[in-house]
Image (cartoon, rainbow, N blue to C red; front, side, top):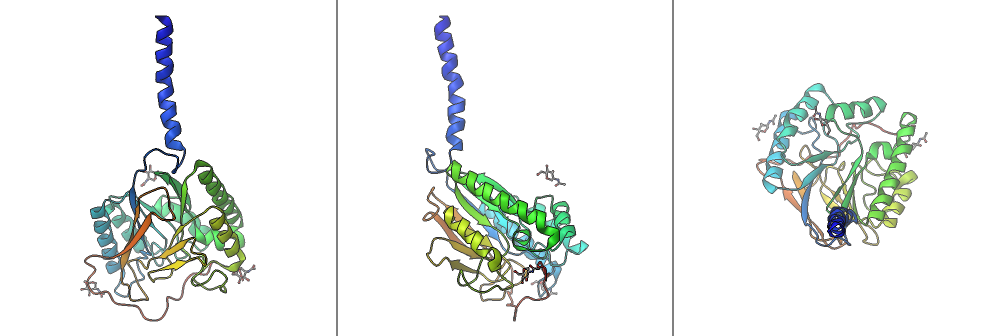
Length: 303
Ligand SMILES: *[C@@H]1O[C@H](CO)[C@@H](O)[C@H](O)[C@H]1NC(C)=O
Ligand SMILES: *[C@@H]1O[C@H](CO)[C@@H](O)[C@H](O)[C@H]1NC(C)=O
Ligand SMILES: *[C@@H]1O[C@H](CO)[C@@H](O)[C@H](O)[C@H]1NC(C)=O
């Protein structure tokens, strides 16, 4: 009798740990894949629109309604949350943000962070870290602060160093867990070709190669960015990954209007089973294309 009891206890004790182990071993080795959907919000950038910050805020409100109706598992906003960090812009953002009933991960852009003071302020204003990572159904989402990652400002140096180390640790631990990796950040790694010259839009060559080597080494297939105020996909020369650029809800400089990227993840094979669809912002009314190029933007480099 005593022996049987011990045996039963042993079996019961085993089950939870076996289950825990199963759910921790990443994607492809997990029994059943749980499909999920997420979205990419472009530059919300309250204060940048041609029709005033109130209308940028109205479009943020529309984005919240649209996102809520979709029932995404989560969304990622790829930086530039306000244009100038004016009190009324931050306040409008903070007032509107709770309208999202879906978890929205916030990233910084160059309009949010361009020195140490604004790096610290970002965490206060939005109650989040400037970079973070999370796992979802066998996928690891790594959200980078591309400002500190690519800047050579001396005041950022310890943050830049720490972020590169953290990034590599995240990649490594995702790989060890067998998780598929998705990256998101504000700046474009490149716009046309991997070896193009430096530009305002992209990672400087100083760090671009290092970043792209990691992307290739860890088999990353999907990179979500903003900054460009256009909506398009950019492909690696060997087609191993896609960079999704989305203009957002403040201003666009192409013919694609305001909108949101929808993603469907249907298996552990992130190379083939992550599909993307660009959907216009519903109820935005007249979408007026901005002419020229965005300018007057904060500099994040040492000269
Ligand atoms: C803001 O949008 C509304 C609705 O489309 C429009 O009537 C109004 O003129 C816009 N405001 C400005 C300053 O353009
Ligand atoms: C800030 O974030 C923490 C952790 O996510 C949360 O518990 C807390 O409620 C947040 N504070 C505010 C003011 O939103
Ligand atoms: C900092 O980086 C920028 C862009 O990569 C470059 O033009 C500049 O020369 C660098 N400055 C210093 C001091 O390294």
